[in-house]
Figure 1: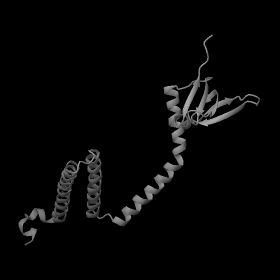
Figure 2 (figure 1 turned 90 degrees about the horizontal axis):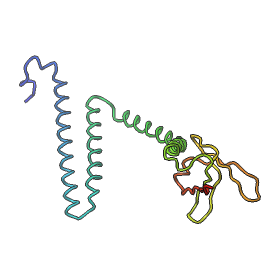
Figure 3 (figure 1 turned 45 degrees about the horizontal axis):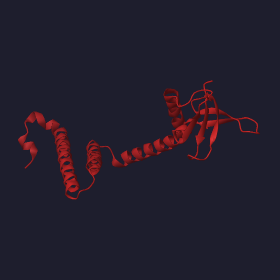
Figure 4 (figure 1 turned 90 degrees about the vertical axis):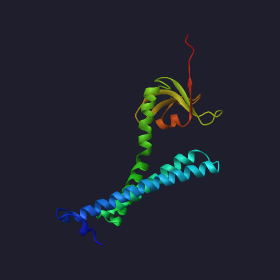
Length: 186
């Protein structure tokens, strides 16, 4: 029993496209049914075994991502995209993105932190600040001379020593406690 026997003559040239459309529609329907079944199963397991409710959300998101990722791969395969070429492209892109992200992380972090310093104003120019290692140990400190996009320049004056300039990365101000010394308004 062939489907050609049941189609009108005008549809015969479109048979391969109709078959492809039916396969994709069936796969999408199956993916939605499988997703609903897995979400119901996860919900039931969480409630039955008194597991944390966060597992419902996390499990649902992971199962949805896996199902629709597999659906996307299936659809691309039906359109003739080689899975090996696709896998090579994905892994290559991921590798380049990871290297670029790692290389730019400190610069981007300092840029973002400088924006936060400008907007939240935890300290200002000519304030005397100290970056504490722990609550009781003294750390880096001095007078704020300039706030750049990447670092903040402090003038460190220690008793009995010559004044020095410190260039502190802006991200450090959000990783450590900062003590702002206020002077008496006299």
